[in-house]
Length: 84
Image (cartoon, rainbow, N blue to C red; front, side):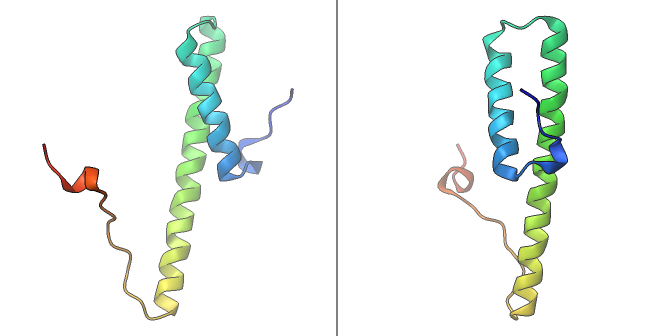
């Protein structure tokens, strides 16, 4: 099956492919060449997703500014607010 070009993937498609790559690499059944090829594709997918997230954050900031809202603040979950 032919793979789509990374720039044509949605965030969700890219994330799903990245998860599949990780699972394949974790199994350890691939030869070195195939592992390296998948690892490289995984890095490219990760970079693609980071760009998509950065773009979404910028769009949210623009929308907030247009509506007179303040800038985004860091989001803290229970895991990030408690120190062990």
